[in-house]
Image 1 (cartoon, helix red, strand yellow):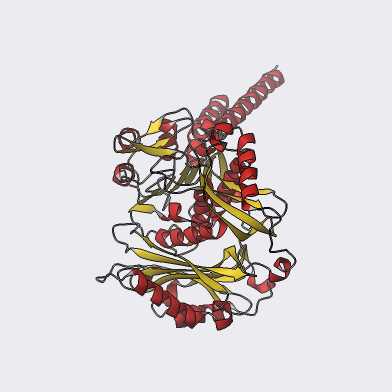
Image 2 (spheres, rainbow over the protein chains, first blue to last red; image 1 turned 135 degrees about the vertical axis):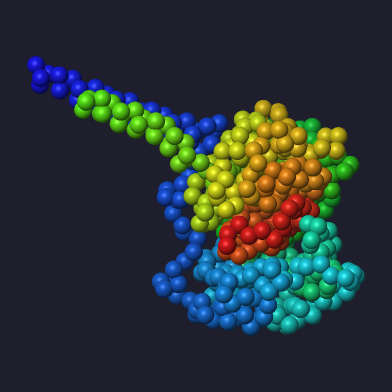
Length: 313
Length: 229
């Protein structure tokens, strides 16, 4: 009799425990999937971004990279310097170094881990307001002098000025900026991705950012005929046909395509380099105030649509 | 006596479970992929956006204070749901991070973000629905999300440190590449959001040949904020 009572009690206890478990699971699930939100936690996500310097073969050590940051940018605060070894998609293996600066801003630079070349710098200490107002021509002159001091004459011969744009301040406490872009020319054709980009502070005339990308493989490009197999008119036809078949665009818009420009460029796509027609265009869905056209890149030999950059938010 | 005590323990356990579960599930950051739900994108474009969001998620988790991320993979249900998502963020986190990619615009001089049910989030909605918060960063990846400052200012009034948006229309793929690169650099130690934006803009120019749309951006609040220190 006593034994039976105890058995019933244990069963009840088990039942309550199971109910508790089900209830707590339901609560977690409810929170995790509330309105479609899926919960990700640090525990179930593995960090793979930063390389372990002790197992990576690099010529430049953390100390070398740190010294380079400090020697070229005396305004950094030594105690706040941070660095990681990164396998970057655009630059390969680099030391990415950052620091606070003495004027309360921040600086980040990328250093090639094999030869110590500075690949990019974004210097917040130079991105501050000033009392002057420099002209576009003066900004260009500053940019050219800066490039001459950082880039070999051989590489300077391979670049061409693409754009000088004035960009308004992005915040009430930031200056206006001239963004200056140079394109790398390979076998007489501009590269879409490679080149040099700089920012010159419009109020102080200082260079606040610099970036040099030189990732296209000349040996691969040497195998591609620079004379296109299809004309730019044919490329536009391909574009219209493509738009026609896309349900979210359709025939009506495809028939109203107005080409703004069409140029040959080297374009990388899935680790392959293509000679491509870069067609910039608008259609009937663009209103008078729309400043930014759509773009399409079509392989100039195969006629394949590499990328359509059409949608707007 | 022993039976009563056992029952008491069970009740305590039950109540503790009820309260502990939600508390432990409070996210530190929130991702909203509403833009993928409007039917005006190809599968390739949706895949591109999703891939960029996954990159952002992997970067955000590098911030020591961010342990849990709520990822609304098909977007929040509506404007109120979006604010509910923000209200559910753990306010003890140093900098809560919110990223939304959606349609946006201006109606009668008021900035709005659009949701998949057609609802529009205006500054007055933020004012009505959002709890007062202790810091945070919101990336409003939508056309004209910072053409006027009304919506951004409301987030700042509610305690956010910084609101980021665009002053004009923005190409969908440029926007997606921009926020992916923005958070890639912005989650590096001691990098201010304004420098992360310049880095992201250059990445967009290298991929698409032009970045004038994403360069036309605005920070409301602290442009010198570092997401990771």
